[in-house]
Image (cartoon, rainbow, N blue to C red; front, side):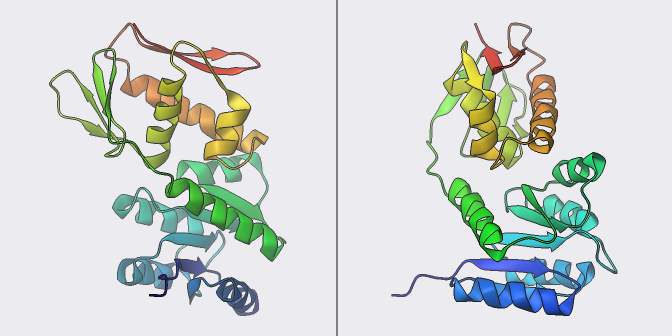
Length: 229
C-alpha cells in the first residue's frame, strides 16, 4: 500500500512563485494546495485538513499573521512556516507570537524550505511517552498537553509549551542547554528564536506560579533550570 502523501497548505499571492513552490514540493512527493489569498487559504485549511502550512505574510484579503491566528484557534499543533520579505525584529517576533514555528526570508532556496518542512514534520512525529509527570503540586500529561494544579481543572498547553516543559523536566534541577533546546524546538538558535523562547518561558512561569516551590531560572550564558522540590 502506498504511503499517504503529506498535505501542505501553501498560501502565496504571487502566482508564478506559488507555482514554482508547488511544483518543487510535489516533486518531493508532497501534496500541495496552493491558494492566492488568506481567505481562500482559510477555507482550504478547514476543508482539506493539511498537515503543515506555508504562509506568505503579505497577502490580500487576509494577511499571513491574521490567517495563522485563525488557524491556531482550531489547531494548535499544525506546524506553520511564514514566508516574508520583512526582517524587522518586531515583525519576526509577531510571527512567533501568533503561532508560527519557523520563518523564511525572501528570496530563499527551495532546498532550504524543504529541509525546514521536513524538520518540523519530524519533530511533530517524535514518539511521545504516555506517562503523566508530577511537578511539585502539578500533574503534567505530556501527550495530551495538559497541566493541572492539585484537583483543579487542567489547562491546555500549546504544542511548543508542552515540549519545552517536557525538556525542562527531563533536566530538572540541572541546566537545560539554551542552544540545544532552540535547535530542537525552533530549528535554529538565532536571535529571533531566542526571543521567542524567552516569551514561552515567561508563559510557563505564569502557569506554574501556584506552587511557590517551583521556579524556572535563567542561568545566564547557559540556559534554563527547572527547580522542583
